[in-house]
Length: 514
Image (cartoon, rainbow, N blue to C red; front, side):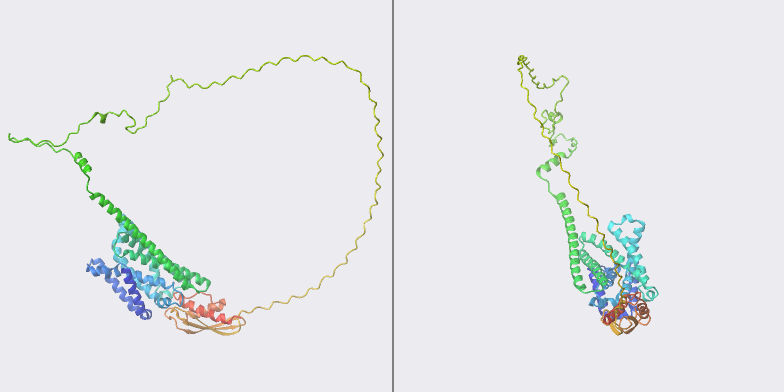
């Protein structure tokens, strides 16, 4: 809830004082520094505030809620489509907002670092796991934030090379990821403990950071295609799924907390449940017998009877039960001894012996009779085979010698006429700059013999504190004339103003195309 209040305050600052913050940020920086100094002094002095101030005002500045809200506005400003209302509102004040957020973050780290940073480097084992990881994230965040914060001042930024400044600013994505992790490590354990408002905080932070990541990726893909058509619709779909994911995480945290509460209630119910009569009797018997009372010297006194029942041990307790099934134990099977007779195997019936066959009786041989001799038949004489008459081999006919074909005379190929891309003349175009308004930057482009010979900035309604059309614009125009293309590097710290100039030149060249 405190974060939502801080986010509302940051939005009011932008909507009500955005123009003053952009043109004269110095007084705002001074107020933020004074508030941060007061937070540090109160933290080290151990000042105690009333309950209302301690719950709703002190966390805005000391616990970093306002710093986180300002960083969220800086973060989402780059995810809006160019020319949208969100871009027109946040982009002009993105730099001052990041400087304010850095000032409040330093105060938060000093106020809480006196406790948690000291424990981190002296007695880390005493910190809970989530708090230990959050402290480590905070240390890395500070190392990443300080260079980004220093180079956000215009005086420092303009002294850097554009490519070096852009490479440095890419570390901001790591800072945003660590910021999300740091916040969730601190809020989810409190939500699991059932602390009021932390479940809503988990939902809001998850929705914001997941939606930003999805929208930023979609915008980068659209810029690669050089077309933002339909980007707003795709980002709305991504926002819907981010809300679903945040709701799922919040419900999971709530279910885990209810499960913990249920286990605690079950344990409490078991410990307070009354004993039954049998359990009470067993508990009474298990108690030791009270010591005997001393004998009284009064003869008339009657000794009280001993009501403690005696337990007489029976023989069945010490002797084993003869029935093995009564004790539930399996009895081993008896093993065969050496004197036991082996089991006889069935004998195989003997095969009958073969019977001797009787000897055959001798057969009398027949008396040979005289046989008539056969007259030999004469063999037929083979007829002589006629030899085939060989056919005469035809003589080969000589082929006529081909006459040489005259070579064709080569026809000269005409040289291709060069294709002209642009028409000669002067054309105008406009683009959207840092303020997010169409026509922020207007140019005129002169074409002669299919070459860009001149580019002039005819109107510049953008933020001159970040982009000087006389100096920065001249450097970009010289690079465009040398490359014969509008796709050149921009000015460090003036990403959107540089893109506005490039877009204006592209619009003029699109009119000059045939």
